[in-house]
Image 1: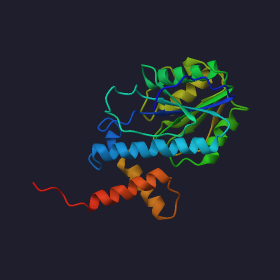
Image 2: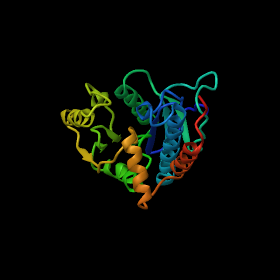
Image 3: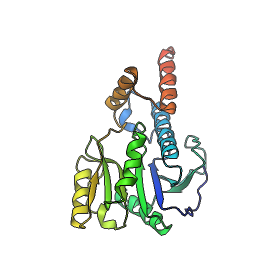
Image 4: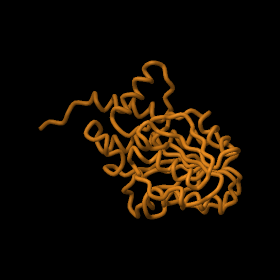
Length: 240
């Protein structure tokens, strides 16, 4: 997918943050339960299902995807075809807080009134929570969707201040509370949504499969991934 200018004029901007799908560099916490190639396919399925969720739930919003890095000059990354409604860009340099601040700055510079960043690791997030995140910004300054590991699967704001992301220990169980504390220091009204889980570790994948076996909804790309995975496991092992 080619990069595009962020020129969509819309009051609401939904931003999807995702890592560029390169085998061996995504979902490494799933090794050795999955091979690097399988883990990358899971990441692609999760990203595609999250993108489809935003596309369905937010037809009037501008939708952007910020990749973790620019496309490689050679086809090192896996091909991924996202909905045409998503405009592609590359995240800024720096830690996660700086990269999110840069994306939000761009959203408000484009004329947005409300902007929400979604992670690509929660593809089973209900559409109602996506809608709630924007609705909350009608009466709150910041909205947070806490993940069960202490981080958050979404963050949205109706004003911009990079101090919201200062001194946060990213990828730790403290990230949610530290961000909420930053909002309190700014004097911002905070809305907290219900918690959800990310597909980060093998136990999360097993949980998703268990819920699907009990009749829980499984997004289409993840369903296809698990079908392929079952086929992979039935293949005979190569000879020594």
